[in-house]
Image 1 (cartoon, rainbow, N blue to C red):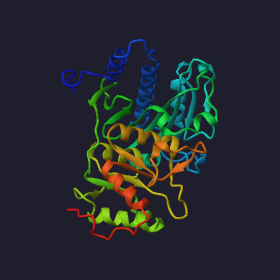
Image 2: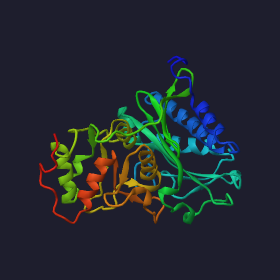
Image 3: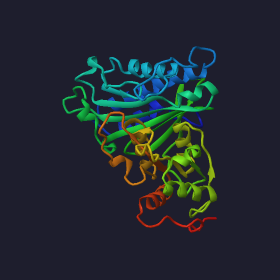
Image 4: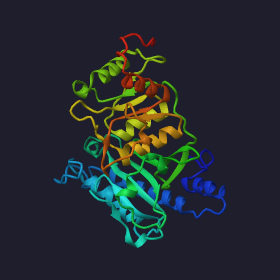
Length: 346
C-alpha cells in the first residue's frame, strides 16, 4: 500500500478532527490512540496463534458462565495496561471482569469510562475464524471520580463514541463519533492504521441476513416466521442470502458494509437473549445508527434501553434501517403474522 493512495493514518485523522475544534483537550484523540495500541498488540497475538500459547482453554469460567480462553485474558490485560497511568480513563468495564476495574492512578484526571469486550468470538481462534474487539466510550462523572453502578447503568444514547476491531484477513478498526463512521486498515509492514473506509453508510435492503438457525426451535413463532420469510426471499426488495460466521464482529462488519440484517433473538425460555447490552449491543447500535441503520431488540430501540445490571443481556436485530423496521413491525405487531409470500419480494 503506497502512501500516495492512502495518506491519512489514524493519528493524522484524529489530529485533523481535533484541529477542527479549537480549545479541545486532545484527550479523546489520545484515548483512540491507546485503543489503537491495544488492537495492534492483540492482532499480533492472534497472528501468532498456533505458534504461541493462546489456543485451548484456561479451565476458568468467567462471570458470563463462559469458558475463558487464554486470548480472553491476554486481551483484557492488554486493555488494562494500555490505559494504566494514561490519565484518560478512570473506570474500565469488561466482559471478562465481574465488577468495574478502577484505575486509581488516573483519577480524578480521567475524563472517560471505557466499556469493552476484549476478544469477541474467542472460541473461534482455535479454528482460525475471524474474531474482534468491541468498545464503548462514555464520559466519566463530572468530578472524574470512579464510576459506580449508578453511573454505568445508563442508556446507550449517552455514549460519545464506539467502535470495533475485526481481526481477519486484514485487521480493521472502525469507530464512530458524532461526525461519522470511519474504517482504518492496519498495514502490518509499517504498524499503522490507514483510513480506507471514510464515512461509512450502510446500504438499504442489503444482500444478506445473518442468524444462527440452529436455534430455530427455541424462538417464538413470530420470529420463526420472520426468518422463514428471509430464507424464502419474501421481504420487499433485493432477495437476500444467509451468511453466518458465528462471530458477532465479523457478522456485523459484513452487515455494516453490505447492508442486510443481523439477528440474535431471545428464546422462549431465555427471552433476555445472549448478547450483552452495555459493551456489545450498545456500541454496535451507536455505530449502525451513525451510519444510517437501525438497532432494536425487536420492540425497543437498543440505545433507549436502560440496563439494570452491568452484564445485562438483550436480543439484537441490527442492520439496514428498512430491514430492521420491517422486523420490528412484524415482531411488535398485535396483528396476525404476515402470510408467507405477502412481502412481495423478488
